[in-house]
Length: 538
Image (cartoon, rainbow, N blue to C red):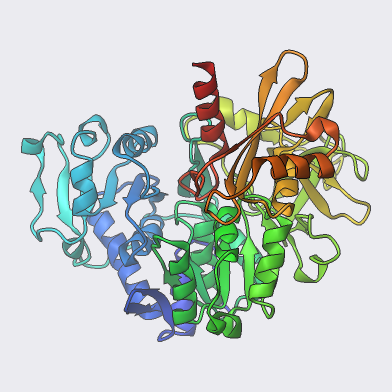
């Protein structure tokens, strides 16, 4: 059987195997693999007609819809690089990305184009706008202040004769995924065709995806775990349901309506879903639910398993710089629910000291990822690339003395420990660790205990400089039932009963929920901490 080596081949080979199988569903409409493959080829031909050069960037600023997926696979099929932009970003943030990676073609909607009117003139490398649902004739936008940018309607672009794209190989760039930018300007993580295809094959293997699966794309497609729903499904010949939801209940309705067999989400969404009643139809179909983007509170995991007792839980850990790193097999969840598991297939995870030597069992160290999923660095940012993508020591595990060429790995910046059986446990991000009264404390450790009290709905912990403690621990939380009825006195008492004295928060602030999210759906710890400091410094 032919194997995919390039990103778009995930679709073309699936179309050869099961041409009439459903590939994508959006609302009441569906595309078969044949339909999807044809449109990807048409989009690639359209880009070639526009004169897209090999390796040039094609940005996609759309909500989840068929055009988003077609453009994401069609751009690399032409030899270009796709840049998915989170639809929640504002025009100035979008313009930064367009300028940062010198985007040549922007695919967007008329509504989003109107929002960008005052910022596109700053994007000097932009030459083409491909707009959905607009007038069919191409026209220049000079009179509207966009500069030498040509406007092309989506349907017109797909009508050009088929032609062969630029020659590409699996180590060429396929995508640039931008981080959320919660700690400054967003960084563009460059991923190759090999990175993305190897990731799809690895994840699909342990999730045991098959043509019988229906996966729900609830996460943003600009988020590596969100886009992975497409790649793993297409590698397996499964179907994907595209969902743009407003309320968590919309996710449950879609799962019941579409017969979803696989759900991947982040902890904040799972926390909300666990508090709702689930339609019985979900448990009849759901084969697994997978967590990524942070540690899932144990209480939330327990609630989810009660909601869908037939579904297998997969606890995963990943980072955009290497797409996916570890997973905990469902059969291990009861024995070690706090573990992030072991390395995914075709990857090796090391726990290293600062000098690059391996840590002993249970000794905290930095999680380091080596293998085919290690990305190509940050776009046009040598300094940040050097911080994360580093050479392994010559005697690192897996390295032999006779090897002459160096090997780069991703140094995650996350503290973990590995037990004697090789299972990994997340401690915290190095830049978020709190040091109080001489003890190093992870925010997630504090949050886990707070969730276990059943007195909070959502919570976030962070450290604030203190003259004697080093860091004072502060918490922002929402009431458990969303009504504001949580008693602060009871919560403080529960903390003192469950935590060592040095870990008890100095202050707890109760606010109406939900807590703010970053564009990838994670609770925005940095924003909450910054706002708290601004309020208390004034």
